[in-house]
Each structure stands twice: as C-alpha cells, then as structure tokens.
Length: 183
Image (cartoon, rainbow, N blue to C red; front, side):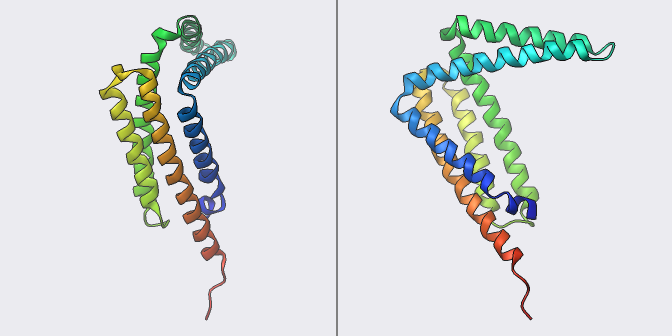
C-alpha cells in the first residue's frame, strides 16, 4: 500500500491530463476529432510495424502470429489515415470497449484494495463512470462523432477530478503512515 501512497502523484498527473484534454475538446471538438483519428492511425501503424519487427526476432513457430498481428496493424493504421471518415465509428467502438474494460479493472482494484487504502470509493467511482461512459458510446454511436466528443470531454473532466481526489487521499494516507506512532 505504501507504494501507492508514495506514487500519489501518478493519479494526480493522470487527472490533470484528463482535465486538460477535456478543456481542449470542449474548446475545439472538430480539431480534437481529427487529432484523435490521426493519433490512432499512427499508433496502429507503429504498433503493427513493431510486431513485424518482433516477428523476425521470435523463435520458430511463434513468428507467424506476430507477423499477422503486425500486418493487420499496419493495414488498419494505413486505412485509418486514408479513410478517416470511415474510421470514426470504429474509433468510437474502440474507445467504448477500452472504457468498459478499463473501468471494470479499476472497480475490481478498488474492491481488492478497500482494506488497504482510504478513498477507494473514488477509485471505484472513477471505474463506474468509465464503464457507464463506454456503455453510452455503444448505445449511441450514430449520434455523431462531434457529439460523442462532448461526452468524451465530460467523462475526461469528471474522471480527472476523481483521479485528483484519489491522489490527495493517497498522499494524506502516505503522510499518516510515515508519522511515527505516539505512545
């Protein structure tokens, strides 16, 4: 538990980044959407390229799955760059499934750590918000990518606040644990 409290600044930085992302998205949603699509394109392409490189260094019998994954990543990255409009809906689903998986993992971590930390409610609440966010994206993908960015920005803002509150809870816990016991 002390490791979490020693690294209290990690959720603080994540929270600040989430809030900055939210504010930038509210201010300029069209630019944010184009940037998200291009970032995903670059990520998929580079990830695919690295899998292809790894395939050549893999042992016998293991190279083909890395090669296939790499070629698929390169294809998706290239298609995303060439056809960004067609990618938007896929990106919405990608973000939705990531949010649900990430949120469930965060809730499970909060449950597991509830006896070791204070403020686990903030971690669980952040996880729940992340799951709800993912479900909303799946339920209404056709509502428009720019409309979805408003939901994404609102989620990022609230999740950022949740992470900042968690960070300060962890920091105060760490300070209490570091104080010598009084007789």
